[in-house]
Image 1 (cartoon, helix red, strand yellow):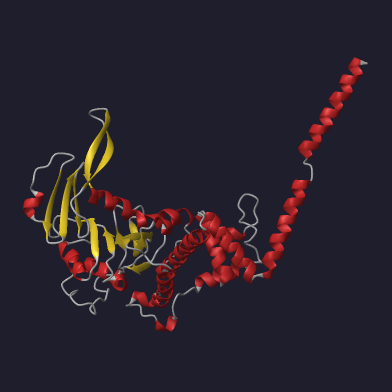
Image 2 (tube, helix red, strand yellow):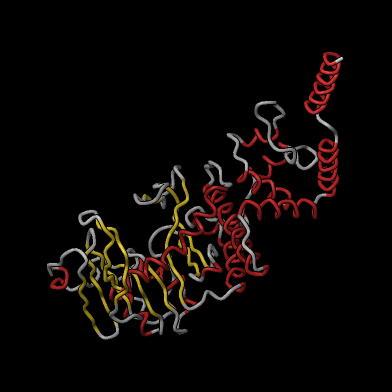
Length: 395
């Protein structure tokens, strides 16, 4: 299974049209040498992929989709939460895995690149050294699935609000701050989390508790206005369109930002609410995981949706390992280079034939480099003939 996982990760680095193409020996279309019968045969790999499961098949229930992944998710999340502390500030957002098969909880999100797919909630620390790390995650499989009944006061919360409480249930009452998008945020949620000593900063929709008289104010571009209710502050900033940000941690304040004015054809200094800048600088923690993973996505088309989710989560944990490796060794490493090193060490540890193949390949390459090439020999021969001709002419 370790060899199988290594080959799956390698397929994310080297994309070929079909899985069987990795074992082809054609001159035009041939996979890397690691895809050979010595490492793992094609039929053996396809057989494992066909019967790959992430839970006990006897315990699965077709009417309860999470039974296919619950054991795997619980094991993974237990390790991700122990490895690091998410810090004082973290971000919560969703990501979308492309999936076009028939699935009752398939989502359509216009703003995402995939648009159609399976939605995964991710909670990520905003600390730059932990960029790309996934602290916790949950799969969206429909409404009324996030059980927070054991937390007092959550009965009146909507589904999107319960997701926030569910995702950070082990981080409440510790004075932390969560950065949220407008799909989750409401005045009701912010006030509830204040009772649990948890702060919120995020964009908010005008129908989520924002007073109507506040939205009807006439503002010019670059102007701002504030409204406060107890410890909850809402700021409205007029840019190309109105931006509403709610916070229970920050006070009314401004930061100076340089912006090029097309009308005046010069750089102008704007007074921008610090809350907008705070949101923009911290909300990208979740997007960082997609940026690092997308070029090396190992997931394939499959009617079995849980396989795609399982491989995606597996690759997300490789990214977590890369982040921890960079922090421990105090040096940045590329996702591609880390995946190559990881696959190399997995195969060397669990397959003795791989070490012999790798050493043989290195020796052959070293010997080829040490031998003079035919072009170099031809060049020396040409110089020798030209020297002889020049001597004959002089004589």
